[in-house]
Length: 165
Image (cartoon, rainbow, N blue to C red; front, side, top):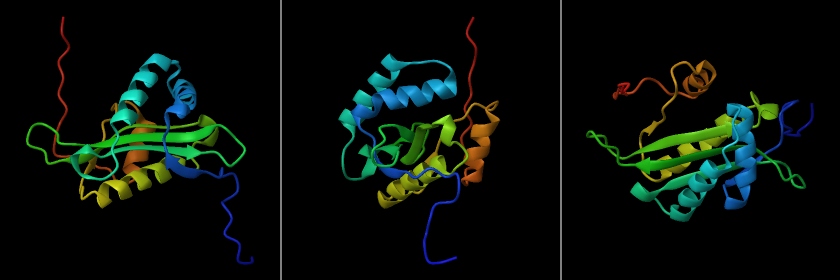
């Protein structure tokens, strides 16, 4: 083998960049493939509000929107991630929250979500944040396994809920 650093076989080439409003259709497409439901109005609301309020810099206002873009010449996204710094209630210090991550099913299990998460972690850390949190449905074993494989463990807060009649 000579000195070429090629991507592993089967691994799509991607470049990470900031998520843009024009990525809306691709985010909707990926989410629909994962969830089975197309939610364009929901994602339009989320992306418009999120991206409009995103600020450059650091601290409690930091918002991260990342896209795993397909190689040049292709218009599709391979994945996306949204996160932000939140000064959470109940005595928690400001921390990073990952609240959306999605990968095109055709590109799953190729490290794209891990690359997106690693970049988000770098940005949180550069902003002085020492903890990153997320919330996952306890029955969603693949997503739980993904976060655990990326170093997440049970945190010090428990989410509690009550069904209302």
